[in-house]
Length: 207
Image 1 (cartoon, helix red, strand yellow):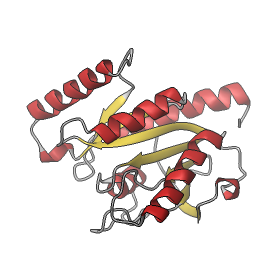
Image 2: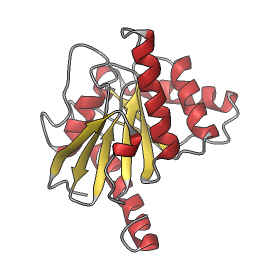
Image 3: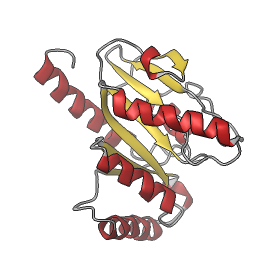
């Protein structure tokens, strides 16, 4: 898939105010400072589509971007971000949950994980929630340029082991990416393209 157009549509914290278009949506979420904005910019060929920041937790709204006029990329707040008030955190954690459980247009979520670190309990917990709620998702390992190929393989293997230990029958689809080097870009976009084709074929252009 080639991304020709990518435009910001709306930010909000109320799922009922999300776009009414019945176009497939792909949500990107992960812990703060996982490299989400950089990944989105890399995938869409835009340096500043998603705002990158040295301050983790910058994204605190549901952000919709219309891609190629036929699907939405959704940038969601990081989960488990500690440096906001408990009240603020409970509010945006709630609308994250609302989005996943109420948004019919959601085709797939991409859970971003920093490949440099060993399996984190919060990531496993979040993916368990997704699995229990029957929300389709893939894993995107980020920052692959920061460690060796051997370490990448061992960290992915450790995640597989951890998920199997948490009663997963199989590892969800996953991608290894680097925003700096463009690694994994074609694979992620091809996956989205395949899902889109299936959706449009089965639903004659919508949900």
